[in-house]
Image (cartoon, rainbow, N blue to C red; front, side):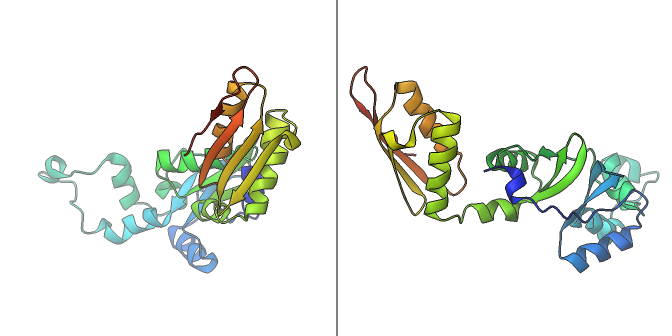
Length: 221
């Protein structure tokens, strides 16, 4: 499953000069926790609820001064957020983005690696959508029929060029089981690895065989 299949296409965004008060109002109005900051269609950064919260706590942090400079534990970027008045001053930049043709699993990996809750989706540098953690969690609830269809049509046929009727695919509660024959051990391993990346898959078990030795390989996740 690709990012463009689960992303939100109508993106609420702001520009660098948007007052932070207006940013907060937009978040509340649209019930979202972050907004891309853009210059035209080009993504400059992300402003989030966390950035707004810096303003709420800013007054209680140490002020620069004779002793404050020594004791202030906050970085220059954090100090900039405390004094921010606009989206451009408060945003986190550069934004971590992803292409619409990327896989959902790649989006999940980026979010976990960079500890972000949303990714602007770009096409040739142009903002075309946004994908959130909630969008990715939603894909995990896919039906067994949807998962089996992707395994047969996309993984077996398009990615591995294996005729789906040569491999038995059973999906129950997101648990996948493969049976049948493939060309070699490499194809069997590739099928298991790719199946584990399909959204909604909980586990993969393989009892595939190949001509060289006729043995079955069983690989529970």
